[in-house]
Amino acid sequence: MGYSDSNKDGGYLSANWFLYRAQKELSRVADECGVKLRFFHGKGGSIDRGGGTSYRSLRAQPHAAHDGRIRITEQGEVISLKYSNPVIAQRNLEQLTSAVIAVQCLPPSDPVAAKLSRWEAHLDQLARLSFDCYQLLIYQTPEFVEYFWQATPIDLIEHLRLGSRPTRRQATTDIRQLRAIPWVFAWTQSRHLLSAWYGVGHALHEFTRQDSGGLAKLRDMYQHWPFFRTLIDNAEVSLAKTDLRIAAEYAAQVRSPAVREKIFGLIQREYNLTLKLLLDVTERTTLLENQPVLAQSIRLRNPHVDPLNHLQIRFLARWRRANEQQRTEPLRRLLALTVNGIAFGMKSTG
Image: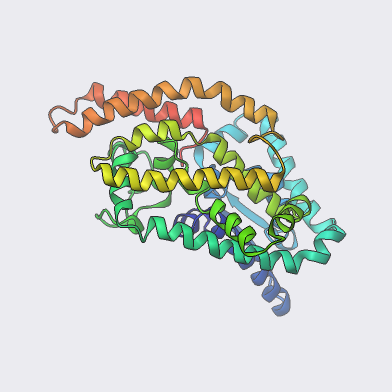
């Protein structure tokens, strides 16, 4: 199950929904044909690459471990964080195991079973709205490509060769040829986190605009459907980690004022819309109100991550102006340290 590339192609909400729907349909066909089925989940550590809390994610997707069979891959740094300590490793394995057992042995609650087909139709509508919004910005707005290559440190990420594979499938600036890992990494480093929430606000807004009882339906889905609740909660975490104040400083690196103002303006409007609609649906007043420990963790980390972003912006501009002789080893090492520090502070390498 390709969480990363599907997210890059269609955005967070639509990717998660279409993967859910594919697993459900494949499970149905496998049962009809008497075929044993096991899904291999290619999950990353970040939410926009399929990450998130293991137990909640599996409980929210009853078809992910069909007949109790499942296979999962996790990124190297996630393996280190989750399994290098025996106690933490045991806890993570317990969460995975208990989630698979619970999916097999515990039937869905009555509200879920009674309303599931209706909720799935609603989410299909939301996914298509989100998909159109995401595609409009990423692939149908000509100025977006220029913004991406100048307002994120993607060229630095390519130069440092941090991944195990080339960042692009072909030597071109076409975003379609860029692999999902550097795509997510660039947005995380620049604090946009665009790939983890963009399109969600538009979809929720349009749904409530087109249906007079839309907000009540969304709240009902959030309260009683684990899949939708996990989807919204993960988007909320991504919004909480996003810092458009820092992102605006990266946007200032875009040479064309018209491009900068247009694209960053679209991003800012969608962020504000997503923030408002998420709080409306969850009936909370602030982000992560239901996860105070995580909220505090982000508040404590940010003062240490922010200076690294400022350093990266300053010296990235110098590195971009320099010729090969001026790109000295101390400068390259300094920029590499900012990349590593931001990744560690944001708990994400893409």
